[in-house]
Image (cartoon, rainbow, N blue to C red):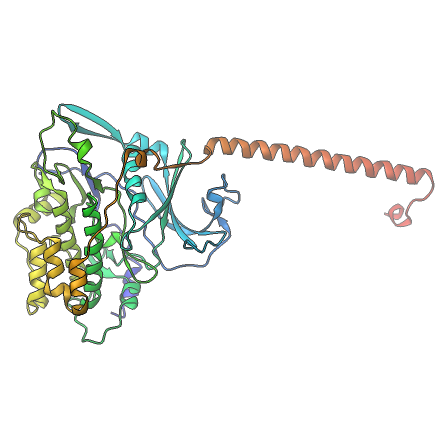
Length: 467
């Protein structure tokens, strides 16, 4: 495991097209999928670097265009996608109630409004934009509060061109990263170092997998965080190691709600011409190809909540073995494998029946037989080493939150328009330059007048005269 740092330098390379997101409203069977549209880069984080004095908008911008974003100092870029740029920033004024470091995710509003999506509601075709969708997602994030979810502190919208999400910063980054050259996940050094201590013999099924006690600790927290989302009628739809971050105290954080879905039964059931669909069921697919369950690859409605459990199983598989249960760079072949091939567990785990039982229960192709949260919380593997907390873990109850239309409408905090601010800045600079020029001319005129007076009285300074 000593050679992992070198591998991690290469781990951010793209895994061909396999990990691109797919979010389609089509109800036809997925047999020959087209390339997935690019998605915003998740808030990928790294160890805390040295802070600079630059603006949060860009390293070159010495004068941030508004006083809201000017509260933050730019540290470094974290990532860049088709619609967003993510930057690590530090508050210029310390706040005891908040972390100094935050991740700012900046969107181009005009681009979001151009990205349109068509979906059928009953007999009508509804057109929505990426901006409409992100408004709902932001409202969801602002209402949720859980230690195992990345929190959203604020959303700043100038109503014209800029949309900024102020997100919690997880300094220890992704729990695992994908290495495209070896086509395997590699554990982050921070995740291993932070949870390395254990009094029991270390079990590790693969060189590129996490030690079992670390995977178990993270998996328990994922169960709690995901159950909180489901209890509040939200499915994540893109659970994977890239979207699992490690916070300040080693707490696992579920991140990236870019394709999450909130089931509002009042709205979704309001159209009488729509054929009734059970709560939590969808007909469109979304997320990452390698983490999609078999039932989502057909035209039939499927439970998005049960699909999250499958993705949780693929995530645990990746954490333990560093590989995926189904893998192909050809998407059509990958879908065929997911739908038809049985799960094959590595030989290294065959001597551990509890581990096998858990993985097979999570990756059960029949969604009706797939493990539930209740079964997961009682499972032998999940509770090994946590016997004292077993009862509390199993009886844990999750609070629910309400998300209203007002929450969605007030999801953004309006800030002055960037274009207006730019014009104000230019105008201000022009006025300041003219003022400075007038003062300088006045001083030169005064000096000239004084020199003329001195010359007339014969009191010239010899040194000046010699010069």
